[in-house]
Length: 67
Image (cartoon, rainbow, N blue to C red; front, side, top):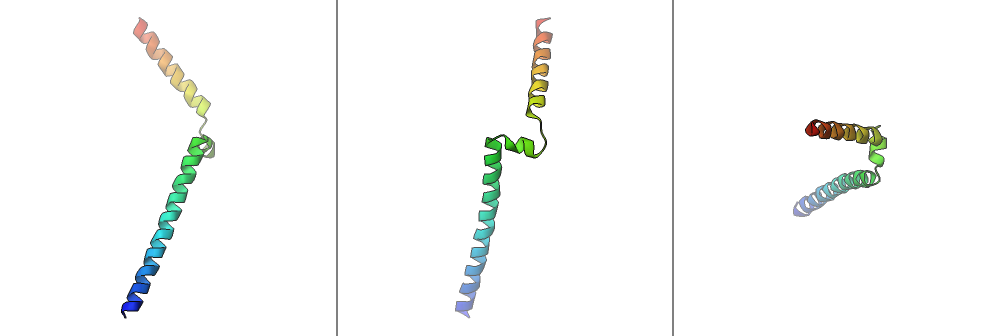
């Protein structure tokens, strides 16, 4: 009975390690895509549009401060 319990514990531990490895792989893939800026394309985010909007907001705030 003890040997069966130890074997089952080992199986559960192995399954947990597999699940953790899969999660870590997905995290690493997202980090890689983020580093390449590919993640924005994957989700349809146009980075240039966002940069343009931020630049316009910054210009507007600077203009408001001058007057």
